Amino acid sequence: MKIVIFLALASVTAARMAYQLPDGFLEILGGPPNQVFSCENRPYGYYADVANDCRIFHICHPVVDELTGRILQQAHFSFICGNQTVFSQESLTCAHPEDAFPCEQAESLYDISNADFGKIPEPTDNI
Image 1 (cartoon, rainbow, N blue to C red):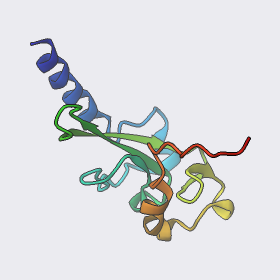
Image 2: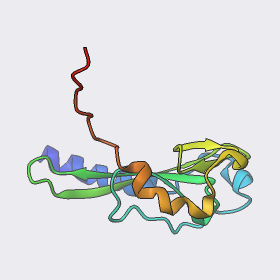
Image 3: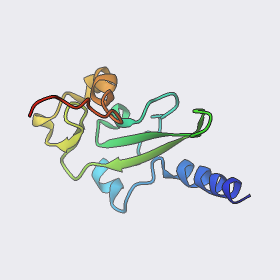
């Protein structure tokens, strides 16, 4: 019973985290965000929000049942880069636009930049 209640609360909390941005975000964005980005069918990773000129980025985190391996839910968290910075999909950091990977091309790096999350490197035999 405790597990069911916890999962129900986790679902509600995670669902509410998408586009929940800090105070002052309207001044940074110049208006309400375009809420079109979805974590649906995305692996764990960081994603630039191209619809918002990469001033917002998202973390998608599939919550998996440890026994079955089935995805129970897709947690979605949204963040805003500080004033005058954008999310660079190449470095997965907020950067000045002139130093960032071009926003309009960010989606082309989604798979590449997030490919190594959760992977543990093989030990080397270097002594």
